[in-house]
Image (cartoon, rainbow, N blue to C red; front, side):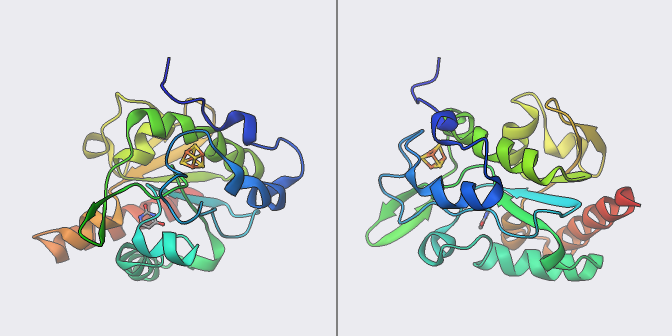
Length: 205
Ligand code: URA
Ligand code: SF4
């Protein structure tokens, strides 16, 4: 049993994405709502063939209320463009909807959500996937992998491979764009990330 109630009781199973977006902020499925500014909903067309799943909103996303608008978002934009994918054609979301951080003076330093928080938030992601029904999910990094594939799945072992999601559907795993931002071998790792996005596009056919 987790220490958290989990999001399920807040997740609407009728009313589509508009309803999801309208009630996401009410969620008390774990403790992350307490310190974050807001819940950040996924964005993009609900008819997208491709869903990209990141980790959690960061400092910028928490303040602005949109996914991937900070440094990781700029990297992602650049990689998507290089791969020939239009950001406005994809549905972009996170495995966990509230920002987790530690204070360092006034700075809010990102902290990876715990296994319990990832599990607690999963019903939101599951509902988004149920609504969008994408042809392919791109798993970006370890937190998204844990949310979608469970604890045994290692992105480093499976990146670029087509995998079946336990809940149904097809996915491909890659790194999180933040890992590329921080990389000591930036050009190489950007190239590999773009290769994975190209592989995703190729799987769409
Ligand atoms: N990192 C994520 O995983 N998601 C965002 O929205 C921003 C940074
Ligand atoms: Fe609910 Fe997810 Fe926010 Fe936790 S992180 S309060 S489960 S929306």
